[in-house]
Length: 211
Image 1: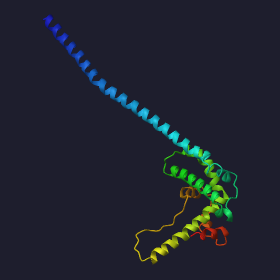
Image 2 (image 1 turned 30 degrees about the vertical axis):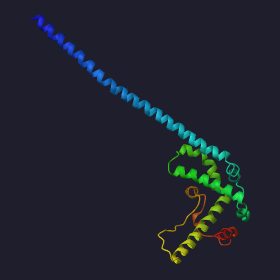
Image 3 (image 1 turned 180 degrees about the horizontal axis):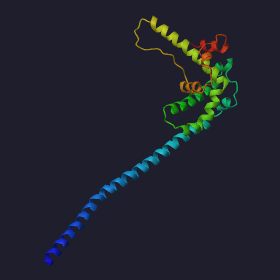
Image 4 (image 1 turned 90 degrees about the horizontal axis):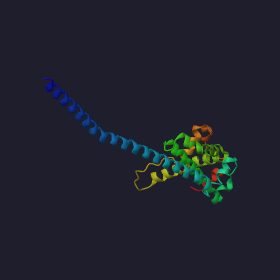
């Protein structure tokens, strides 16, 4: 009788050990898979951070080293009066200013679309604020905005009198939109005054001649 009991107990112990081994051997592949997944996520996340840092670095590098931008930003920083009647006859200056404002507007676009984060945007914020508060920038935007209205109106009128059918909708366009939106958001301009064209402005007539 004692021998029978010992045999049963021995069998139970053997089954218990075998079950443990089966569980462990079955769990190891799953554990290895989970560890591999976690490592992959960590590596991927580090790569994303590295690429993001490189992208921000490239944006900053262009701001400080692009020949069309690097000197132009000082016009904004020192609030110089660069927008005079001669502006449209100085192609080099016009190109530099337009390139710089377009670039700053692109940075605002990246922030608006949440492609870059707030902390990353702060690296450019000071320069954007200088451009946004520059009196010549505001006057330039003022005239361009009203120029775009006149231009859109002329294009729409031509389309109405054209014998050709057109399905295009001509809407008011404005260059540097995202920088302009930033200026409005931070109240660098009085939109009530900004919405009315100053027909006595000599520069305003200069840009109208180009339509």
